[in-house]
Length: 60
Image: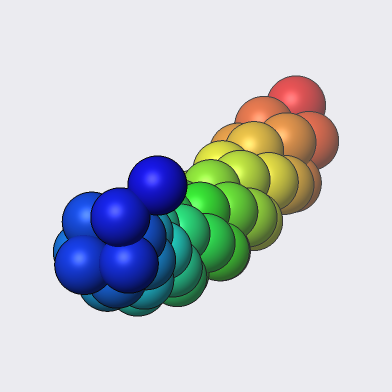
C-alpha cells in the first residue's frame, strides 16, 4: 500500500470518526431530552388524573 494513500485513508477515517462522535453525542442528548420530556408529561398526566379523582370523590 502506498504511504500517501494510507495517509489519505487515515485522515478520512479520522474525519468519519469525528463526525460519528458528534452524531452520537447529538443522539444521546436528544434521547435524554425526550426521556425527560416523557417523564414530565407522564407526571402532568398523573397530577391531572389525581385531581380528577379527588374532584370526583368530593362531588359524590
